[in-house]
Length: 234
Length: 234
Image 1: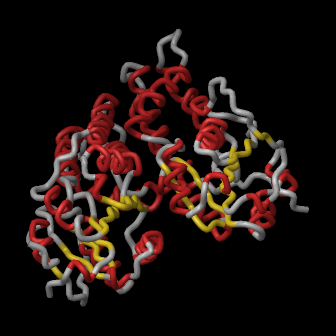
Image 2: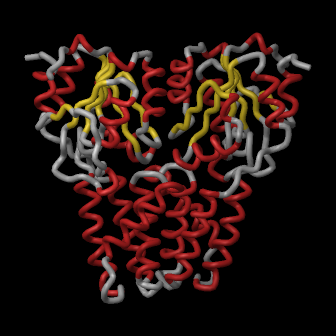
Image 3: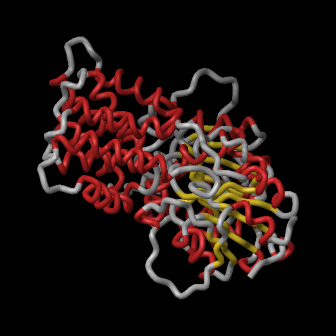
């Protein structure tokens, strides 16, 4: 069902893989990790499976983002090679992470025009999880920051986080719409608190964002370019 | 000059080395790092100087906190030993960081009573910089979170950050008082925007928090236990 922009006091966007590329960088880093580590790994070990398992365990204490990912790569490389991976390779793994942190932002198609169009009609916010320094760097260097009345970099996108964000913004859930590429993080928790959400799938989904079955009726658009029309804007 | 609690709508506290120990953990980690790395380091290299230099360079892209510190330790160990440090030692360095992230919070003396006393008279906030997941973990596991109307984990404690925090809290600078152990991060930027600040020195100061000479007249208390009396409370 399409909506009108007047239905919302705040339209909030996710950042990674909604406004700019992110998962592409992680998957490229993983491919490079596999190339570097495989020569030192015993036969029969699935390098990426092992890496994902380490990542999944580390998230509780390390959180999301590039620094946590880099530390997980280092731990995984050491454990899956039984410390046979040379120090110089660990150095290369650490540098993969360091370059991700300073990589230029690559905006997805239509993003600036859509923010400009929707932002002329209602307040926009950005809600993203991950590394404070990295997400801040991307927001500020993207040239998009001025569109947003509020930028929230959060630890976890769960219902209670969204409730806190809405309180900060002074908006009620039924006047709030979240737009993003993750059903798990951008859609279901917002619906759970009585808000509105739009799913815009990205061609890659991080394994840990893949959602189990759910009963919610999720609004899905093919591209961020469809958002203005969905909101009844030309 | 002492104040009255009625002078302030919000009294905000720094966290690390104001409410709980932090720098002790970093210095213990550095000492352990030196022990581990020194055997592989050429004579004539000052291990801790080299580590601090790497940290200082990394902060721009990695930010503050334990994960950034851990990655700096790994990079420093590899570079200062010309990759001669064994992989197993890198593994031990990574585990130093991992244990810091899950170490129990050790509150400084008098903290709960002071928050309770002052919090009965005015709104309290917590403003801390560092790692989102680690700082959140410390706040929630400390048992102190309920004292604070707002917990702000920020990238950098500069005047513009404090302006944003004050706007969020809906408080004017002259009705805001910040209390913390760092003249550089907790006092000078708050005075710069017209706010009030109290310095409570900790027995250790991180090298990167040591401030150059300044002309501001800084209010200093010997202990957090002196805060209620400074605010005119019994």
